[in-house]
Every structure is written in C-alpha cells, then in structure tokens.
Image (cartoon, rainbow, N blue to C red; front, side, top):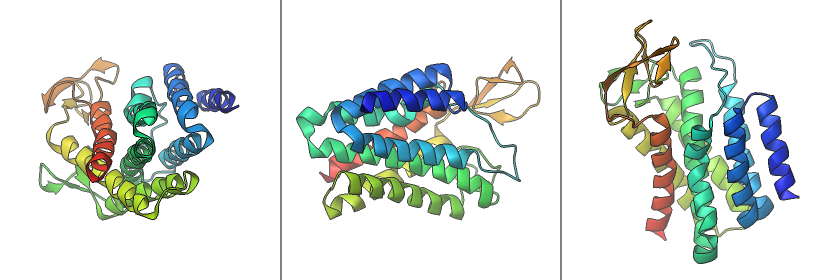
Length: 246
C-alpha cells in the first residue's frame, strides 16, 4: 500500500508541475526506499518536508518574480538522497538511522524555509562573504527572518519525525540542532565556495548553467560546486552531526 501511495504522490506532483518527469522518477525511487525501511512513518516525514517546501515556494511574492520551478532529479536527490541513504543503513544502525533520516530532512526543510520566507519577508539580506547588504535570492545571504524560519523549519520536521517514530525526548533537540546546523553550513558554503555565474545576455548573476537560453559565464567559487551539491552537503552534515552526538 505504501508503494502505491508513493507512485500516486509522484504522479500528482508531476501533474501540478511540482516535479519534472525525471524528478518524479527520482522521487519514486527515494520514496520506495524510505517506505520499505520506515513504512508510513518515514513517508509522513518525507511528505511533510515536500508539501511544506512546495507550498512556501509558491507563495505570492512582491519583491521578486516568483519561480514556477519544477524540481529536477538532481534537486530531489540533493534534498532526499541522504534521507534514503540513512534508511538503507537501518538494518545496521537501527534507531540511529531513523534520527539521521529525520535530521537530514529537517536540514533540507530548514534551508528551504529560510530561503522562501527570508526573501519574501526578510527584506534585503546580509551577504557573509561580501559583508554588505546583498540581493534577495543569492546563496550565502542571511536575514533575521530567514534565520528564524530556518530554525522553525528544522523544528517542525523534527517534531513530526519525533512524534511518528515515538523517539526519546532528547532526540527532538538533537534533530532540530542538526537540521539548523546543516542550514548554516549550506549558507557558509553558498557564500564562500559555491560557484557563481553570470548571464551573457542580461548580465544578471545566477547559479544556473543556462540563462536567457545561453550558456552562462563562470565568475568565481569552486567549479561545478553548484546549488544541488551544496544542498547535499547541507543534508549530509545534519546526519553527521547526529552521528557525532550519538
């Protein structure tokens, strides 16, 4: 029954254009792994992250053009790959893998909530590397609203995971902290290491390889360390923090 639900949700997400075709296929694979090892409980936590992130990403925006983005396969794996990997470790790690699983999704939610709420309600953010007020939407920028949203997103997903898996009270704190730390690491890498590119047509700074239907120009950072790679580091670091505390 869980596997049928995974397929149904993936098809629904594809229909409303929340996922691309390959994004839906990747999400189905991730969902199958989580359903096999963590059953309904795992799918509930995964669903809470995906639904909340999708809804926040489609909120009206006044200060920028709202993106009607479809999550690609790479984006799905960047946000859910570590969660699926944690599920695969369940036969060997037991409850520890559950805590790592929840923490990785808490980190993904923390980063997404910070981005979506921060750029809508946080005003112009402060960029860590440039040490000045920057533009909305650039990696490595922080705001008070965004930081609070990051903590709230991590806590919300951790709370759901703590409840459905009936974990000990201390794990709620660990997962929330781990998720928030993952978001901070994402911001630091986004500011200092993530590659920055520039559109040849409109001269806008971007994180995409293609903009205005033209190949963008590399400006700075580590080549090929894009947003998806940094998001993977975000979720992976949360799992590592849990491992460290354990």
